[in-house]
Amino acid sequence: MSLSLSVGFGGVRVNSGRFGRWVLSTLLGFCGFGVGVSCGLTIGYYLFIYFQPCDVKDPVIRPLVERDTKSFTLIAA
Image (cartoon, rainbow, N blue to C red; front, side, top):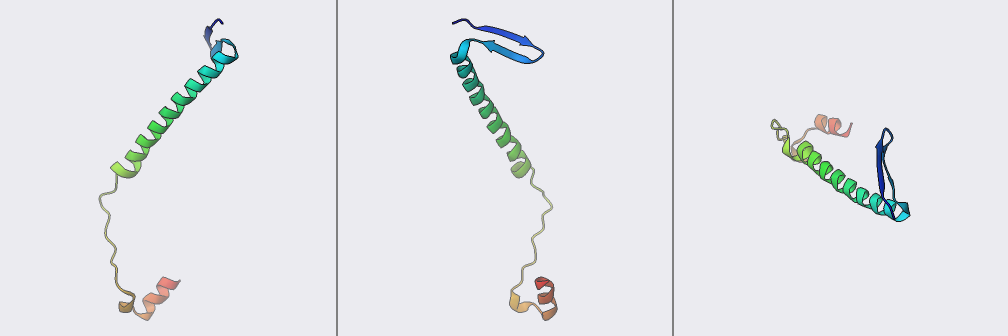
């Protein structure tokens, strides 16, 4: 079984028979999955956990008993 690798405008071509292409495809698939998951977790961490807004205000929470009729109509609308 011979292996020849050619790089051209269309990308990388590997001519090594069916088994070699399957092995190369599987290895590149696992590597791509690992890189994709790692990048996704890193980007997600920085977007949603690390850079949290600092100027978040706590809402005023009052029991429903303390509300009047006008505020009930605003809540229901």
